[in-house]
Amino acid sequence: MNSNVQKGQESLDQAWLSAPEPGWRLVDFQNLMGGDVVERAKFVSDDQGDRISSAYFWDPVQNQLRAKFWFGPQAQGPPGHVHGGAMAAVMDEVMGGACWGAGNQVLAAEINVHFRDKLPLRTRCIAKGEVVSIEGRRVSARAQLVTVAGDLVCESTGTFIQLSSDQMSGLLAASSGAPA
Image 1 (cartoon, one colour):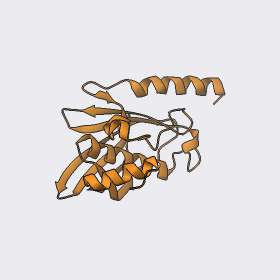
Image 2 (cartoon, one colour):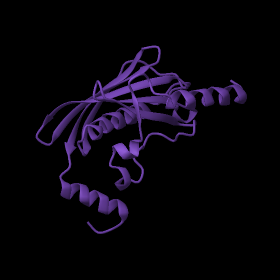
Image 3 (cartoon, helix red, strand yellow):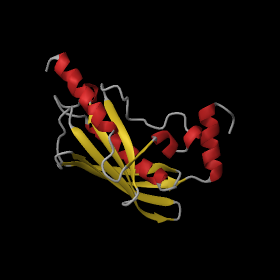
């Protein structure tokens, strides 16, 4: 693919990323994760079109975090396809974001990712994540990543642990360089 066609495709994908589907509300991932207290909430996305670009939405009817992803050439694992670790990071972020969006300040304790198909680079994808249950401090979540054509690429489950206010204060102090 020549660079002009590639740049045109990346531009189109960036426009697609930010357009909400019916019923979805665009959310700032940083605000979802605690607003001003979290300096950089999105880990997986570079939003430059080279690695992973994303946009996050809240679906209030389904009470789910939705996201659009586009994996660029720097996300390559097998030739022409997305690295499994990139997809696993996306699943972690979507499940964690769903927990935070539902009001649970959590850290991941365990995630399981089941890869169902290989994912070609430059494919438009949609993820959904949701809280499945809460038992004490344990929050269970799940997520799926599908292509816009509806092909299931991977799905995941995770266990997240709710942070106490002291634990959250300690994390925030550590991230700012202040003593906990």
